[in-house]
Structures are given as C-alpha cells and as structure tokens.
Length: 246
Image (cartoon, rainbow, N blue to C red):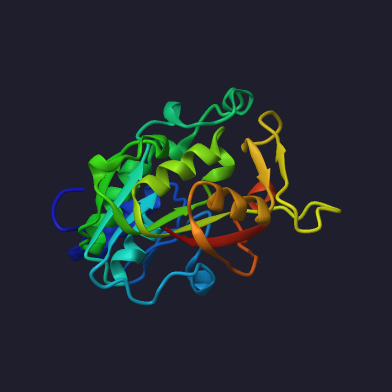
C-alpha cells in the first residue's frame, strides 16, 4: 500500500480486512485487526516492566509484531523482531506439515508486519532468522520476549540456549502449559510430533527448569491464565509466563 497508510483510514481498513491476522492490533482510529488472539486484556499477566526506557529489546517469533510494538510503546530505545520468512522454514512436525495445505497465517506474516509497522509509524527492525540462529552478530539485549514458540520446536532447550546467548538482562518466555496428573510440581514434558501442531506439551516446572539449565537465574513464575482463541480447539488452554535473569 503506497504512501502514508496512517493518513488514509479507509484504505488502511481495506488492507487490514484483506489479510488473515494472528494478533489483534489497534492500527488507527476504528481500525483493529481481527486476530486469532487478543493479548490486550491480558497484558498485565506477561511480567513486562511498565517502562523499558533506554533498553534494547528483542521479540523472538514476532508474527504480526504485537509484542515488538508493545516493547517499543513502553519506551524501548531499540526493538529488533526476528521471524522466519517462509512457511517451509518452520520447525513443524513433518506429519502435521503434510496436513497443512494452505498455511495462510504464516504465508502473509511479512505483509502483515510491514502494514502494521507503517500504520503505527514504528521503528522496529525485522530480521529474518530462526531462533536457532540467534547470535552475537545481532548484539546483546536488555530484555527478550519469546511467546508461544517452544512447543513448536524440536529443540526447545537449544532455542533457549540461543536466547540466553544474546541476553544481557532478562528474558520473558510465554508458552502453553499443561498440568499433568500426579506430576506434583515435577518438570514433565510429553512428546507429540504426530497428532497436533506441537512437538511438546510442557509443564510449567519443565519450562522453568529449562531456563535454569541454560543459565537463567532467579526465574520469576507468573500465575497461569487462559488466553482464549477465536480458532478454538488446540489453540486454547493455559499459558505460563516465566522471566529469568542472567
């Protein structure tokens, strides 16, 4: 969409309607994306500091950019958002990939992010790379946010190692969690990789222990909550939030 999208609400609304959104974003007066998830009512559950003034921040797996723009809104001096460019690059289980004939939600995320960035007048910089490729060429970050990603990954511990590698302050990890019967607070994980989109079902204590295992200390554990989804089904369920310091 050429020109300044913020100065053309009708044109912006038409562009928004054309796309299938993952995040619910307020992009202008009366222009709100119809996302699969609306995180706005749950922001206070995510352990984000109210002010990020002067901090350098990273959003891992940014999708439409909701969290990257929220970090910027809270005063971050610089925000980098990383994601993969093409659906074929996603670390999905092969059995699930074969059933995904039209991965629209991932195929158009570059367009959605760029439209939102321009509508918001944002300076967030988007980098194309996997969480497994995070390295010091990006520099280091005071605060890193990674949301709903670990369950999608074959190697969630390796991903956390990479996040720790570029973290000089703290990292917030949000992810679906499962309460396993008779777990009694133990760090339990269940492997899937066939029937659903995720490789792993993780308990809260499992995520906390993973973070400690890769070098995060003083891990703060938020209160679990439900994040309703318009998609329903396996997208619903409890979310856990964990913030660890280096």
